[in-house]
Length: 114
Image 1 (cartoon, rainbow, N blue to C red):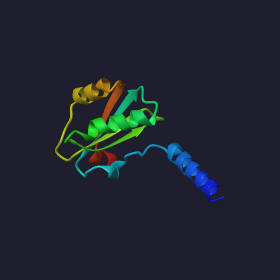
Image 2: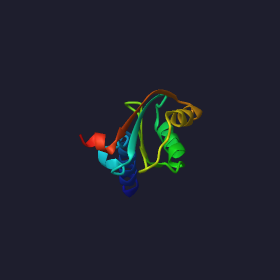
Image 3: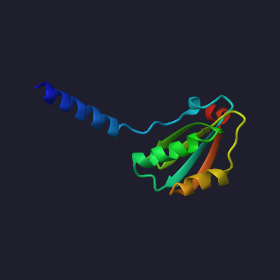
């Protein structure tokens, strides 16, 4: 009986973990003077895609955080205060990972607060 209860609990936990939406970054998710880069990317379809993109960007010194929203095909990159990445650098990292960039939009903390 304990085995069955443990199995049910484990399956329920796993199902909830897989069904949880990807984290989304908001204005408070980056430094007060940092920049949030929103990248619309085609080809992001699974959690493995999201983890791969997160690993690629988190290796960069300029990046303080990354969130991938699979349902919206959106990658949100939080840059550290005083740091920058060009659209070309971002596009290259994403295309080298096997995805296509449909658009890039930048937002500063000051603009997000408005």
